[in-house]
Length: 150
Image (cartoon, rainbow, N blue to C red; front, side, top):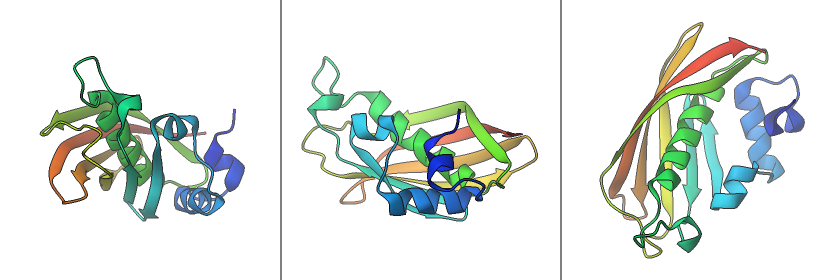
């Protein structure tokens, strides 16, 4: 089964696929469901933006931690994706998230920015931050990803 990145740029490098995805205006289902977007991508770097709302609320009246984790995981994954050859793919092995501040509908737009620390033959490592529009740190993440041939 081919993914959306393969649909928009078959046979391209990871960075070329993600750049084509941004240009296409298309988004995977998770991004549509949770209302976030891949906004920027460079070699070893990815940025997602989103606006948390009641669609992501938990029973106690704040944005569910899974919303932050999803943006951070997406950013780490796409940062690693940007480093891959046309024959490589990845999957998250581990994601550690630290929550520093809660989010509500009043938080406004948030930004998850990830940077690759290293990419080896079988594993990659990335870190990400989630900030609000004022630059306040909301959460951080570190990720280990499995890299393998298609």
